[in-house]
Image (cartoon, protein in one colour):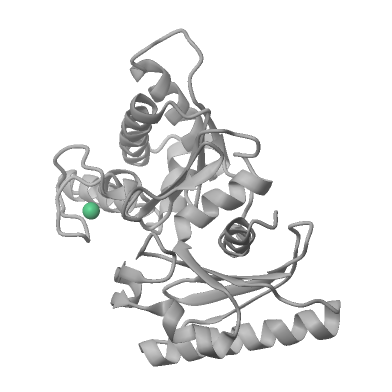
Length: 310
Ligand SMILES: [Zn+2]
């Protein structure tokens, strides 16, 4: 068995993956705040899951995979930057290794969600593919030649910070015009609020990305305008990726992707209109299918990938 841990800004999700890549146990607990507290929580989780594997499944754990919402070294051991946790230059593997007594591998959470899609989801069997996670920001994980691609320095791919044009507010990274300031759930809400203010009107519903979609579908003009802009820039980002990578599949995941297929349909139409080479096969745009546990499953699969036991 292998342990998968999805370290988020609010909660740590974790679980046990059996030899057929099924998540047989999963749990969640608060992340904690200081580095010491978080490292301690991770060490406790690893101990608990080792015990559980032994007692309930009569199985030994062969390794631990950890996904973090940040930039990780290519050696899969060091967290360079993790804004959510306020981490900079943290030797996470070193901090955990002695206590865990197991091989530990760390990676960016979007890369691991893409790995989960590759093994059990919408990127299954795909040679070149991309997972875009649309939530409070935009994350991206890319598969090339059937393997996660991390670039030369581990910095790929921070697609949420690809600059698409000038925007009316700055990104959390300090730049202006990043992809995630146009097409994330946060961006949708901000643009809808700007439309309200520009038109000197108040919203007829409680403002959230979900409610903006519901009202856009029901014909509310400003909601539709906000969703349309989100889809326009999402399509622009996707067409850029198609022009560079020509992937077989681009999967959309994260809280905003579902929206009853509304965003997917609009985005597909806009991508089709903006393709460089029209009328020939190009990337299929699909919804991600590995669900809420993709981060935990992907983290566990990383152990299998690195120890080559798949
Ligand atoms: Zn940015």
